[in-house]
Image (cartoon, rainbow, N blue to C red; front, top):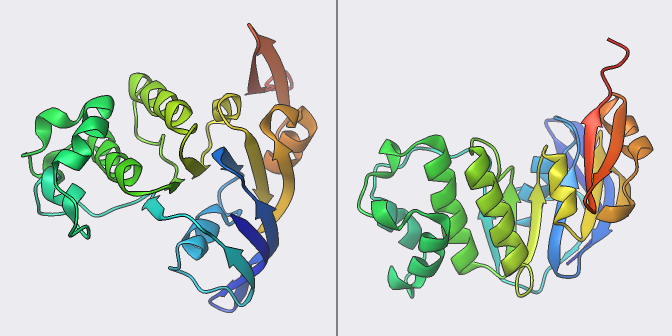
Length: 226
């Protein structure tokens, strides 16, 4: 995927300012504080928002998991099949089992917990897309399900491409590339392993420290001044 010089105006305000980045398979994460333009960028990539300038080049079939969704008055199996005339429920069963939702395919979608609804939409996206775009896929999930989603992305990242937004800095450990945004601009793009304390501290305007344990990198807010 190539995104070059994207500008987006909404309500007379420029939300995205010449956003440029590229991805090349695997797991790609977009980080940034609230209001940095992450969701607007994803909606632009899937065609919900029209850019005023710039180029978007995508050659894979996209699937999308929004951060917010309505509690549809339909069964889980019908949510999975919605918009896909050529698919059968059997096509979703492998991912449903991986995500642990195979036992409630006949439940009403609105009756599910927030986490179960999110897992349902992630199952749909994993089955249907080659480029899977997800807005805050780890929100409203307990620790076990967060680990399950991250492990699933690592496994599928060998054959599918992911572009996700998150506030979970731990996902830097499973992603190949990081795109960091602030105030509608990309202020960093590169290897996730090269993200520094300085760039994250500048992005979130709090002091962030980097710590390595058993080969994994963890970032945390330095509260020593409080």
